[in-house]
Amino acid sequence: MNATEQNYTMLVHTSGKKIDHEADRATIEEAVLALTKPESPAFAALVARVLETAEKLYPKANPDNLTGYVVANASRATLTVLNSERDRKAAGDNATDPSSPFSIIIGGNIVSRGVTFPNLLAMFFTRDVRHRLQQDTYIQRARMFGARGSYLEHFELTIPAQLYADWHRCFVFHRLALETIKENLDSPVWLGDGRVSVASGASIDKATVALDKGEMAFGLFDFSPEFDQLVMQNATDPATLAALRHQIGNDALPGFLIEFIKAVLAGGGGGLAIHNASSIASYGASANHVAISRARGFMGKSQLELKKFPTAVHHVKIFYNAEGRARLFYKNQGSLQFIQNLALSFAA
Image (cartoon, rainbow, N blue to C red; front, top):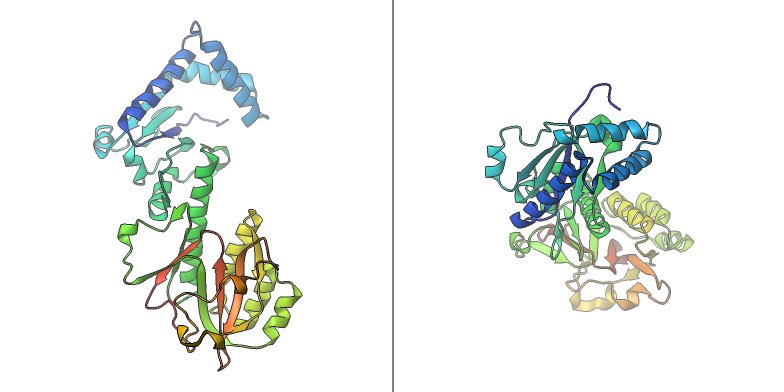
């Protein structure tokens, strides 16, 4: 326990509807009130729950002392509803600062716009999206977590598993996109999938942005048959990609892609297949043989070798032209989508 008493906040965010916030308020007030009245029918059960939680979260502390503190100070709990900017102004300049050891804030849409909560110790977040989670919205929304510093290990987040997985993937995609900028690629590559979108469709100018559902290409490089010899050593290991990157350079195979594949594989996201290189001579006029690009892409069923790699989701393959120039392509058999500036996506 702290040497001196400090104030902390619990944030409850379940919905954007005001009527739901009133229901949340009633539920919380009922529980707090019950803890202040030993004669309440719910008192014994709540105290037992607090004791059980204290034993689980702080096994080195005295659970009776912790429980006694909660019961003795339950009447000091404060409850604030922030549905709008008006509510926030009415609560004062320090509306999000905890004013008691148990400050509970029920948030509405104002919370979704990126309000920071100092000393946020617990968060009950169940507000999901109807369709796809937008990266720009949820990255801004994460400001509500605030900076927790020394008490980070005690922070507790209660959230549905699917929403947590989507939010986590949202940040993975965002960090990967930032890596494309750090590694000086010609144009940032933003990633999305069936659950996570880069941004609202209305905000994407399709005249200047390429929406590629699964196939990504990188910088040109000089082809060598030795690349196939390297691939054949282990065509399903990300370490092979790292060795290949050492041969062809970062522009041709950015490190962020390898890190992304490794992270997804570690989470059980399918297998990896690194294919032998192929010439694009047979593609005729349907391909740009100088830029090694093709509107429909190069990696169809035959190139994916599904019988050889039946569980592969991540496919990597080099295509080369008659002049000995080559380009590496990555195709995701899942729902991954790449968004890149159209004018720069195939810069030589």
